[in-house]
Image (cartoon, rainbow, N blue to C red; front, side, top):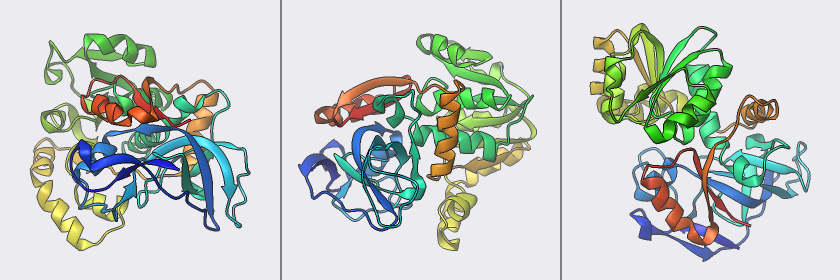
Length: 334
């Protein structure tokens, strides 16, 4: 079968389409014929070697972290799925494998696609959707009346985050360019800051929480807009000790490394009476089923920016890395 394979850690030349052997499912695994796969920043960060401290893959390795497709076969102990089911998944962090004609997915990470979605739209849901759900519901504990700031709301995770925050009953403030403003307003954003002409720190105050998608200066300034006791959750900053323990299941050594790396960010949080949390989302079939229900009932709509054929996956990476996508970028496998 054809697959996009990481052969070394490096730049765009480090991965290529090549023929590999079709995988076989173990007892609790499902073989999926992949119709479409989503691209995310974690993909080019993995390729570049920036995540080796967290997850180092034995190379060569088939890349790709989310997919939509049809069940081709099931392991002997799989009970929840059958051949022909339309499914989607966020892949196991330890294996990847979505950028291929066929992929192995543990049964507990798999969910049935919403009947209303095509494969391209479904492929863009798992990683960004689960990230937004876990950050907003589990970490920030948004509830009716909460006020949340989501900088970068027109991006892949941001488009899910705005909708999920509104479903949870929160008031949403976000940033967008003039090009992205109509999109984030359509998704439910209550207040939109034009980041091309305005500094959000001049207009945003008293937030219960911030879901940071951009990192850098945006993250450091976010502590100024939360009220005392507020929380900033980031997927773009620097991991902190709880990331090692809670998200990665690792020990004291990695926690100590993250303690040092995140010291400046945590110090800034303390200075403003806030707390800081870096989130590595976890794959979950049951939570993906929840997202499927939200989609089915019209509470959540995947926003797909562009779909590339598999033969143009390198161009898809370039497009994603340029940082201009409004919504998700997807590669169509079949």
